[in-house]
Image (cartoon, rainbow, N blue to C red; front, top):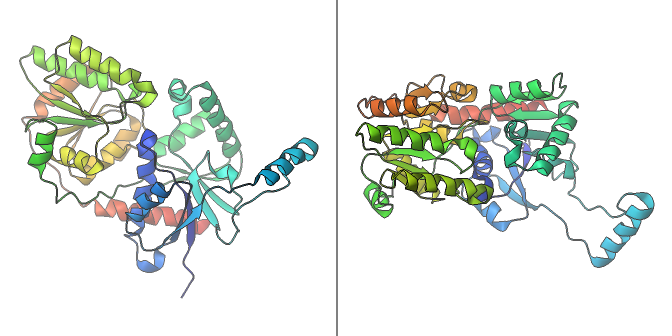
Length: 380
């Protein structure tokens, strides 16, 4: 029997960028859809025991752990300091054995710190080019430097969408890196043991509501949804929109501005801010909602939309190229101009009257994700 392919994944669980954590968790979950002989041995490289436990919760059978960093004694640190002064490099460099990490996959900021014959870099999007203000000048400049180094090399780079890959070529014309497009799919946890009425009651949510889960960055465009609700109320149409997501992103300034606007316009009965809630409860709320709204002005490949697709939910999505790419074969999607609150309000009113839902087998998306990823791995 052929030796099982080994894939190292750099992973850290953080609520600050939960989409990134879910990306790697969903990849490992997707491997379970493959025939056993095609499933890789996944080595999780992390410094955080909680992060490894999150991966273990997937139930993936071929999983192991490596410490992400190494301890240096006081004497070793002193020797390295002297060595850097004299020779401009560390005398003592600790690392994993090559046989432990024949291939390493991760976010592009992390991989340069690891010695490995084969590396596969993930670039989810070009936020540093479109919205650098949310990253800060230092982080945005660092990412652009890394993109330049990757783009004009022979590195293998995974993009989650055709839109992101084309965006990369737009900003880095003539890039020579090997580009691979591997759209991801989500594997949802079992929520059958949760009583929907209990969850709705816990958060004081009515039976009919719209659901918009997103982190609270201004480019996620919650404000257009709030203004659409304002428009509907002016026509005597009372609706409820539920927002979930980490309200502390960017220091919490944007979330507070939204709340102040809701308070000023007297929309407190129409808009619910739940903050960052349990993932399974979030999915119950999505499943029970009338319609899911994804109003973002920029995405790489939206986890919100994948969740909604997996649950066969109707979706109102901003007309980004990437959203249309994600939903091209989905009969549940209607698109609107990202900052057109009047158009969104009309669509929200219409969806409460039309309850037709398009059903399809999402499991094929999950298997396709794992298959495409392993096709890339096997070519390296």
